[in-house]
Image (cartoon, rainbow, N blue to C red; front, side, top):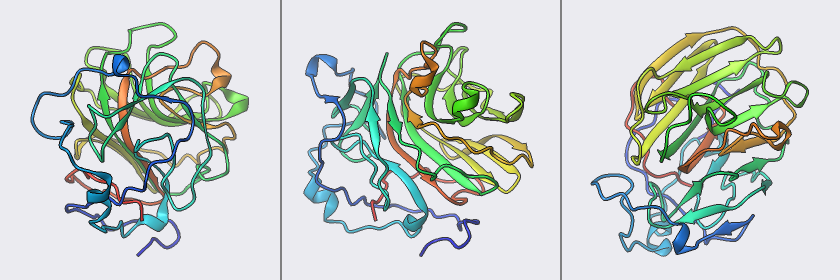
Length: 289
């Protein structure tokens, strides 16, 4: 069951079992034990090493009733690849580690660090205009951004305009300040802030957090772990943006100011429509059909 006219998706909750394809190599990944980070020793999401196999996950046969409206699904299973129904093309501009120890969903996550970025070729899927949408991911921050300088923020997902680099964009970032507050922003063509949502609270380091931003008409909501963190209202139309979208940093046009993430990122999903219209239980698995 999919959306019609990219409108509201009835809120879906419950446990899903992912259908994970056999991983194929795409981009430049490293799986060097020397590069791996410390395992999450706490209970709950993020504890790896369960012994679950790809076959066991694939055998569950679960599906996403809104999968037809998913324009991007990067689940970090063996590669930097899009598992949506219309796979996007990626350019991995620097090494990204495949982390099979610290992950939230499936059997691995993508570990981003200095110079690690995945760019998604511009093919029109993120030209949202006035459409409603949901952008979400699981993120495991390993350090706070500095208070100033070229990496004073860490990008989770971002889309920008090539003619107005750094002034016309929308996306999710971890911003500067203690505990790396979560921020969603849309900056219009004038360079002024058209939408600005900030969690106002901290994200604990070395812990998995589900983060989501939802645009429902003129209403914007930021969620952390399924709980509303901030809201804003704006009738501003998203300007057409023709640079690559990016995960883990800003597009290459930025030069030195790339806002690289120092975090593991898992299950980045962009949906044309409103998945969440109130507090919700964060999804722990992301079906690929």
